[in-house]
Image (cartoon, rainbow, N blue to C red; front, side, top):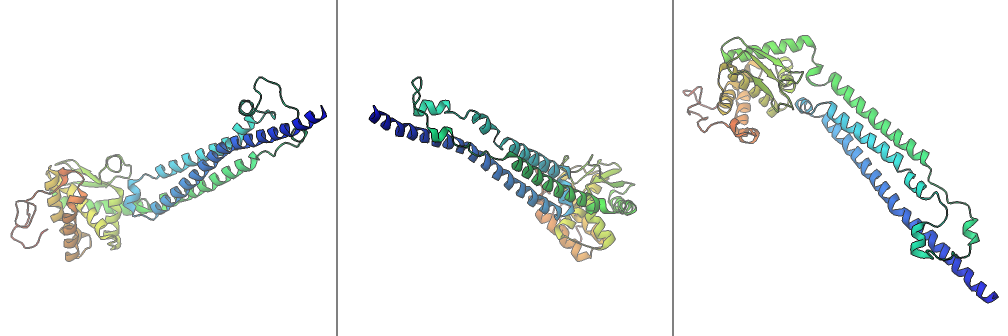
Length: 334
């Protein structure tokens, strides 16, 4: 009998150690998934901050295309998800599963004696101190602190952009002066009294309407995007050309809407006329003759790439001496 008892004790201890190892292995996949999700969220956070930095230093018209609330809302949702994952990943599921310190049902099914007699107790296992549990409080505090820091950076960026950047940074009296200047240039094309306004409300043009400008054909009112207004403001009031293609685009948009106000409906023909009238408008706003001509030639050359819609492609007769040449007797086009 003594010999039989001596042989059973090591087997019971070995089975208990195997059961403990199985429980540890069962915990690892869940912990690994939580850590992987946290790493993914941190990468997304860094990517969002990088995009916001690029957006902050981008040209004004780019920032007007992307509404200010959109990146801020994306950051807020990302941080909310980060905090929720941190709260849920602090061990709640593991703690519920480990509430019973005895062998788990899966361990009994896999490693021993379902429905039979349990082995002799392993004193080393049952009387050892419980394994230290993962401290949840530190994880929660870290998640909340990181979220607060990132949201603070987002708020600072939003405040800086909204206060002193782009068209919104121009004083109200200067904005009114620029709108009068643009209305005057449009009137010289439309040949009747018109009014050009910079649509800061976004009701007429912008990212939702997918348009830099809009005008009633043969009417008196036109609206252009604030980014376009800002380009034209820098040219007419500060004498700064800035981006060559960006300023050329702004002049072409103003001339395009002016031809709509004159009564031309076809978008391709309107573009053809706008590139030609843009030379005179550019000179009136402060460009040299040669610079204005080069800008409009670039706009004409880029038309197949920038049109986006075949309706905006200039017709084949938009050329020197062609049907839509506004000055057929002169050399050079536009």
